Length: 378
Image (cartoon, rainbow, N blue to C red; front, side):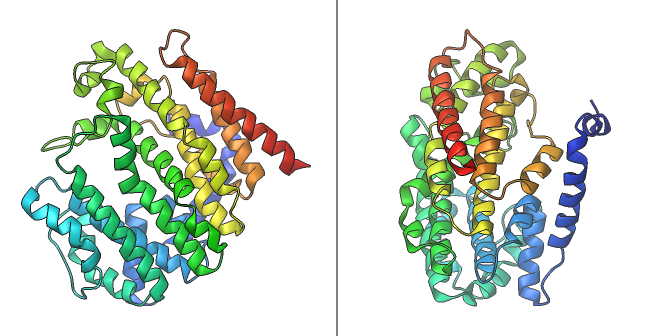
């Protein structure tokens, strides 16, 4: 089905899509300050959906999160560039938190938009140094912790689920922790949200695991060499090598492994709900909840779906637009989660070896969402 046919088959998505398009256009209107204009322009280049959500946040939180995102994208660019020699890369990862205080800092690495980000990274530094000092301290601390964590996994294979959780903590859980600290430092959320490191970590892990699952084919085909983070303790139950899953002859085993990976990701859902139930500012809530709902929708689309091993499986853009438009409170959050959990349950394969645990986790999450939806609807 082409894009037009898909749209016509979901007419309730047409107006949300148009409104999302207008929101995206508004997000491209840059600040007058040239350094801030570069930062927000770069944000639009690397993540349009994130740019829409972040624009709804009040300042100074908005600028701080924009800079936080770009600093971590810079760090991630150093980690991802396979052309960099390991002897150069490791110390750079460990001292990147110092680079963000170095006006004029640049580095030749990365590809496409990220190459330009690194070539003009001094502009990001200028904006960082103009942020409130408490916000600077949060960004620098998380960058330090993440850089050391990334360095740990440069030459380390993800073998156990504990390794998998640890890697995801370094590259995404720490993002959730840093954002929580920025929410508290801004005064928009209670100080207690800045100390909820465990719950914030689960928020990051749920998002990161969704990306790792969805991006299997893109990652396994990466040149000059793939960097994969599916844990051997899971994929080793289904194939001698992780790369085997891209072969059509191994599609059955690949899908069983995929379902096992998604079942693992579902264990983070209760903690994500507990975190978001503590948020009080509507724009902070939307900023956190929209990516979580989209992750749940992506997992539902990927579950028991062999197309994950043929390309990137994505939600419909119209469905994404409806989420952006109808995610304003806990009732909306529970409603969307219930929809995607039901969609996942409808796709189960009775012969799947991980099915008992999958059903248990889906049932527990559905029961919790349904009960809490009733509470907030009274």
